[in-house]
Amino acid sequence: MGLKLDLTAVYVIWLREIKKFWREKTRIITSIAQPLMWLFIMGVGLGSSFRGLGFDYLGYVFPGIVSMTVLFASINSGLGVVWDREFGFFKEILISPVSRAAIVMGKILAGSTTAMIQGLLIFLAAPLVGVILTPAVVIKGLLAMFLLAFSLSSAGVLFGVKISTFHSYSVVMNFVVMPLFLLSGAVFPLQGVPFWIELASRWNPVSYGVDVMRLAIRGYGLFSAPVSIGILLGVALIAGAGAVYCLQREG
Image (cartoon, rainbow, N blue to C red):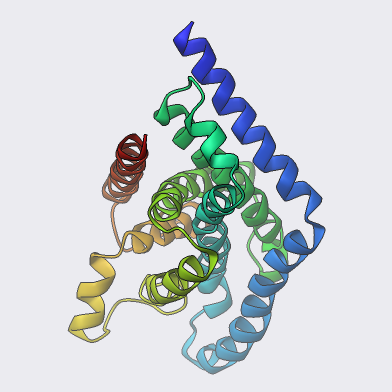
């Protein structure tokens, strides 16, 4: 009975977040407009500088832009937790007989789903930058997106559980997310960079998500796939367990 109740709670929380996302048309439009601007303004602009060197920068940066879309969307999943807390809905969930793990899993899966939808919309623009979408590339790209989205949504939910106001969440996310993105190898290769950047990138979990995405879409990466997958799963496990622990302390 307890397991069935928890699974129902996961589904209800997931469905509620998906419906909220689908109703916010402006959010959907802006979520794909910004990455497309990065891709076609930065990608084309910087790509012209590398063309003489025989380096396909647009093809290189495309997986990074897909990862950026998933990154920002996933981390924002924590904002839903802050929103629910602010308006009292979260308190109603906490006093229900469902487990804290079910609440966290529902939020993580909802964040992963919305992030994948947004990432997929950018992913489908691949032919515009010369990336051929074979069935194998599509399957591997979707798996990479889900892995990255699940890992980062877990981190986003943990942030949402620990941060109590919209303003604080926005400030922290702006301070944390942009450096994670810039130091991930999404927009420039990590080979030959200063030592401190290389060191920071290796401690940056987003680097491994971007690398898995690039490996899936372009067939090459800086790290081995098992290492990247293991690190992303580790982040998801630690962040998810941390969110459950924090909620249990609240209860």
